[in-house]
Length: 75
Image 1 (spheres, rainbow, N blue to C red):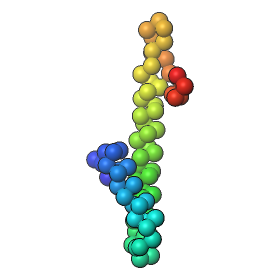
Image 2 (cartoon, rainbow, N blue to C red):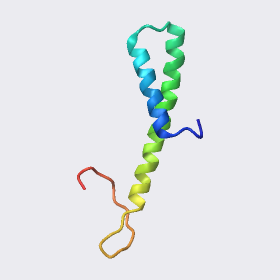
Image 3 (cartoon, helix red, strand yellow):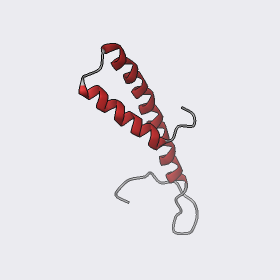
Image 4 (cartoon, helix red, strand yellow):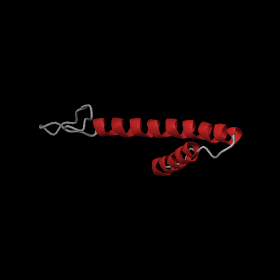
């Protein structure tokens, strides 16, 4: 999964959720894809955390100096 993109991982995670919600899978297969889903969920969370840190690092203040600032949707 090292070369997995966030978008591909999220798409696969959505597929897994849909399959599990359908209730048509045998227990063993449900457990197998649930485990895959947990790994994908962790991967996506890690990628989002990395992106948030990059946004914080790339902000500049009024004087043109770089400053860190927590990201929020309100700004």
